[in-house]
Image (cartoon, rainbow over all chains, first blue to last red; front, top):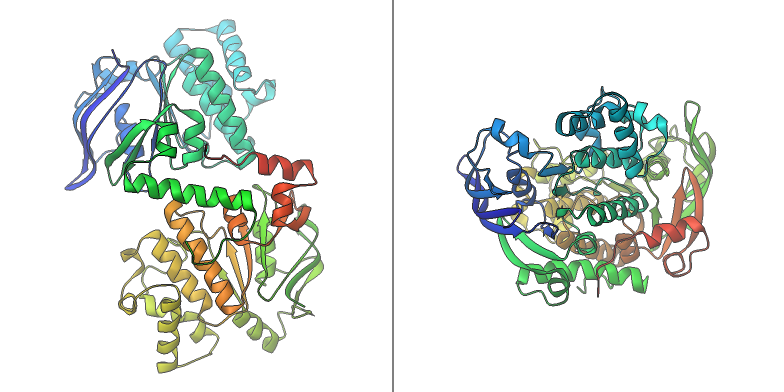
Length: 269
Length: 251
């Protein structure tokens, strides 16, 4: 059985449709990338999987998360799934973290709720969770989010997401707000943790190069629909849909500039 | 001869030093990339080059003369010659103004043209960035991100400047649009012999546009060389790490 089974998902904001008839599935331990540009519906799709669509958006179709239907189900029944089954890491860790709570307490919360840890065992688990995201210093747990760098904050957000040992991690542009050298470290960390824990990964990004490093299979979205799906190496080498071809060509053009290290011939492309 | 130059510039906010001993220069037809991560001082350098702030040490030179905010003739020539393009075309265009007013604004504020002269030059600027005349009577919200950035570039070139200062001009754009705007910048640079200073954290964009590159870190110049040298044979550990961290598409 698939861990995630999305079939015929459509999402509407009033009369505007944001996502139309999207179907995708993700097996336990599998890594799937969703790539698209602004307005493609990739983030809306990832939020819908967790039943986290903002007010005003309505979903139809079906999303089964570990066998449990998500569409049209009251939030109270979905809450037990968020944590042990699936968790999400967002693009901007400064807004995803509670600014008024020390990060150690923010990591402790899911450990207490889902694993039932208390007292010394909880403190040990918080320290271990921080160590696992390569933040071993004790002062990090006592810090507030504003006292940390962007990369450190995203590592904390990952520690929180992983605290309840989810079987699926959804990462929505997790490194887009980070500097390039920091991005490299956070991607390596995600790769290692996903592998070690045998987690499934749903990786949302606009950056083809980043996605292809993280996943085996991708779906390409445009204007709310899936235009192409396949193994990542096949898609970047032999894109089938004209839109995917344009996306790959643009990414290659900038890559080629890095290799040739010479200005492009203005207007030629 | 350089048009715009920073000479040993230093800048602090209170006791926080953000730039120390930064020198760089750009001449007609040259293109210079400023790369570095958050806190490197890229935006502060642009503020200095735009004359929005004065360095506390060293100076800003325009046509080899120190920039002096009290010299009104010099500053008018400076504002005509040096024009900015910002990162976010959603916030850099006034939503309540029609496109003809937005693009013509530098001509009015610098008193470079009036009436039909303004109309002619606005139409010419829009044509050079590949937008039709029916753009004129519309408003920013009717355009996509890439088109808005074209409008912002039209506004920047309407005064026929000699230098464009572009702050992350393609970072807010999707990758397909990004390549088109880069090609536009290159074409304008060649056509008008513009000097171009481009600040970016995106090494791919800098490699596509700029002949030379300055790598900044924590307010200092780490390495300055041709872009080719920076990418293929960086001398410093930091430049090597920066180049090595750029995610690449598998072949």
